[in-house]
Image 1: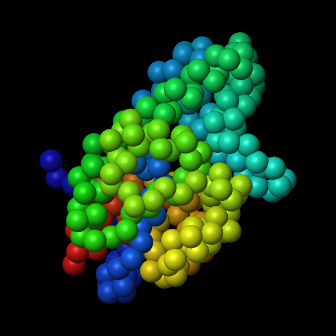
Image 2: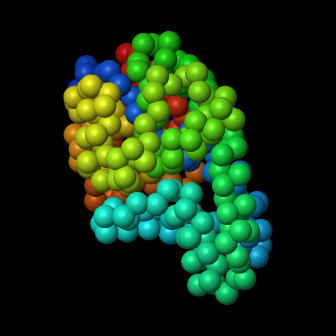
Length: 240
């Protein structure tokens, strides 16, 4: 199998000359395969698989509502509320208990993408500090990593639960940098979401977009330093 490596050629050399000291990772979809939830969420939505992506985008949208209104609910709570909203707006009968069962248990047992363990292992062996930075709760991401076999790869796990500000709020990245004791120019975020890349770049971090299936960059945002298809590619780039 031939893997295409996509790199932002206009800034590759500059960043290779200044590799990050700390690499932050988004979790859901970046490291963990959210497609594993499709069965349970689709069943809750009356078999309408086309509503899966609408549910996830609705969840992200309303995390930003919490940011702007100065309120905070866990990502799980927002996920359940969003699933109920999508069901109601599409004429699907769904109660809160069923919605919760469709999300919470599957979300905590998502498998890693096939390239993730090899990529994390290579980066860790190369001496990089690896930290997860997620919109999920502290308990949730710990359980996710335990179930996915990823716990040992990370030096720390950061959750927006500790600051009550969801990504891509710039204050969340600034908080993570301060907590890690690293300057923005010496840190990188790896994510499969254009909105997360946009936030990280606006906060001054280096950023790598990993092109998971169906994910694209926000074209009006600052471009990432690198675009890759699999995580081991990043280890290869940074080892130059």
